[in-house]
Structures are given as structure tokens and as C-alpha cells.
Length: 113
Image 1 (cartoon, rainbow, N blue to C red):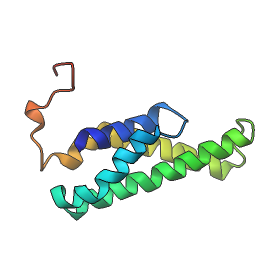
Image 2 (image 1 turned 135 degrees about the horizontal axis):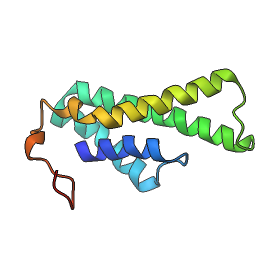
Image 3 (image 1 turned 90 degrees about the vertical axis):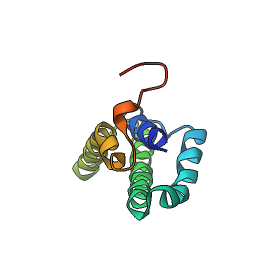
């Protein structure tokens, strides 16, 4: 579950496109499971991620529909704030799961840390 959350957060920092349907589907389906496995704190965190990703996707869609131009300073500030939030959360996601998982033994698939 941690890797799915991390991937969903990271995806938001690397693209202005909506996440692939399979990625969004997997993440959305994990939200109810997160409460069972980790409790309401992680479930709430994942719901917040999902809500913010929808906001980010709507902003990107609006920007594309306007020919790539952000319409207002407020929208520009909102876009910057969301991008910063996703970058910070992707960088620090492991802290949210640290009390549940031992990251001392964790390795990214295909590489050693």
C-alpha cells in the first residue's frame, strides 16, 4: 500500500496529465482497505491525496483548455501550492507509514538502497 501511495504522489509531481486509469483505480480501491490495515489516520491521508489530485487535474485541464495559459493569479498560486504539496508529500511519504513499516529493510523494486 505504501508503494501505491508513493507512486500516486510521485506521478502528480512528474506530469500534467491525469493519472493512468489503472493507477487511479488502484489508488482509489486502496482507500477503504487502508482503514482496515492502518486505521483512520492513513485513510484520511489517502482521501486527502485523492481530493488534492482531483483539484490538480482540474487545474491542468482548465489550463490546457485555455491554450496553456493560467487564467488568474489565484489559479496560478493554487497550481504552485498543489505542486509543492505533492512534491513534499512524495518526498516524505515514508514518514506517514513509518510507525507501521520497517523502512530499514525496504528496497525499491530492482535496486538496493
